[in-house]
Length: 112
Length: 115
Image (cartoon, rainbow over all chains, first blue to last red; front, top):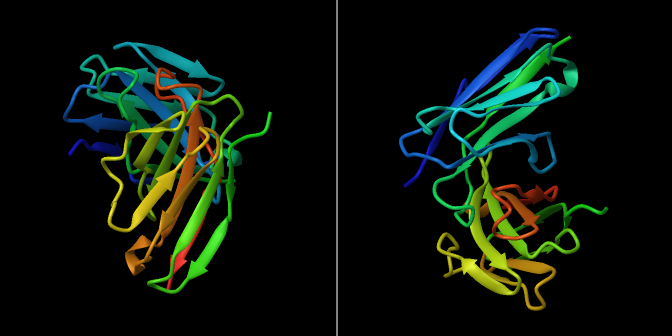
């Protein structure tokens, strides 16, 4: 079935460092989404991307919709302790009526 | 504005027992989703409702799982009988409509432990 791959699986960084993570698929996606999940909570949408090549920012977060439409990237600048959590990429293959498929997540730990 | 409400937050049962989870979506959201999240993995869709109609239940194990959204508002997901492998977090999410372009609002989840 359809599958998204995320890398790295986990990362440990110092506070203040920048973070990069990515998401890849063997299939083309028309929508890419990035969610963050804190322990004991449900995922929260961070950024949504709808066009190949699109670059969108939300505060210290920047995400890009890959040109091939098979990947997406998330960058976090100047990390802070509250950035700790699991970051999921998600996508829709065809129309906005398609189900959303989630990746396995990247676990981020920030060392003060 | 209240978010998606789920109850209970935690449930521990013995295998072969029934269990039910309840979800109240954000007011006005027509689309409701139930997801299964295993440890270390992303959410996997079980069933998706548009108002009271299940528009995608292809991933719902219908031999033991059932769901309903009778009045198109709140929803119940049931497992009967539960198996050890059902231990997971069950997430409910809602969106204004199927055309919400993937943007969903999640509840905190129900963590199920089957002993």
